[in-house]
Image (cartoon, rainbow, N blue to C red; front, top):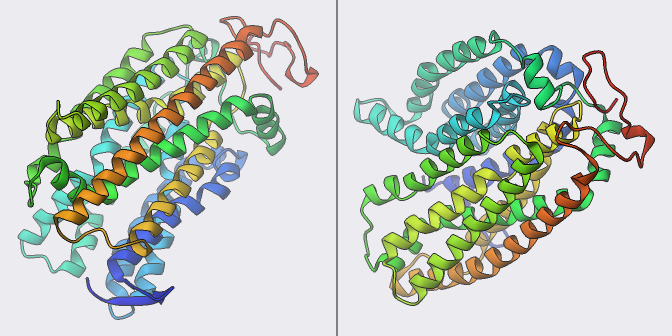
Length: 423
């Protein structure tokens, strides 16, 4: 796709670059309204129809829009933006089905594994359809018609499954809509810990995105090969994806919520240290480029997967907060996409980095510098979060009962089910 859609800051932006930019912007901008919408009573009352609408609308805007406006590239870009805006709410919507359960981490492991490899599956399916003779402009429609009905059917089946049991609610907390006042009060009480968590997540997103945006340059320079075999990109992150899922399943075996939160932070810190150490060994010439990328992927993916949702769910459980943790997911995702957007603009408006061995080495050197600085800062932020929540949660016992009431809004009144929680 060599069509120039617009010129910005003296730089011609071609269709593929515009797709990449609006893809990230759409996902990022949608997080702001998602904070309120996806934790509202309206969403919980109409959850199934809302999610089905998201599935169908995202498919139609991308698949039909790109085909219908094939002669108007700017409209194609707009359709992709709208589709990504709506798609941005899908993960948070699905989390509302699985949060607040004793098996939440196991279910998250399944979800994370599917999301990690969704890109490879999509690319493989698209390639197969093209090989079967489908015209390129009709390929997205063929993919959409094949997958969207199946996705909708599976969603209906998920919606018909029983909600959290009484025992789930007792051990975690009751999940329900939250008002803006309740969300603000929760964020204010845990503001320091949430801030350090969100910043560390944004930085880790940046490290992951840098590697995703410049894979050819980084791998070529690290492995000292001009043409990196395609199979490398398929398997290099497979160990990280598998270990991430195992880590989540292991966390599900920990019943104490405060203990689980501490373990989640310790695992994240250990994964960052593992990624840092592997980079040091590669720099010292003790690891090959291929092994370094595998070990780096393990460190990044394990830490990245254990950030955000598992901690938020356990935090609600540890404090017996009535509500949904999805608004925190949208908040942290928003800052994660800010880091991604910065990298995208660097990719499109920064110095040329894609020509020749010298350009590849410059990208690798820059990435190693970013890794060293980023991993040190992320580790410090995670350690701060660990200390903060360790001290903050001391006023709660393992059943979520608040031993010392500092704010009457967060009292110890029991609800009709005998649960201690916020009102």
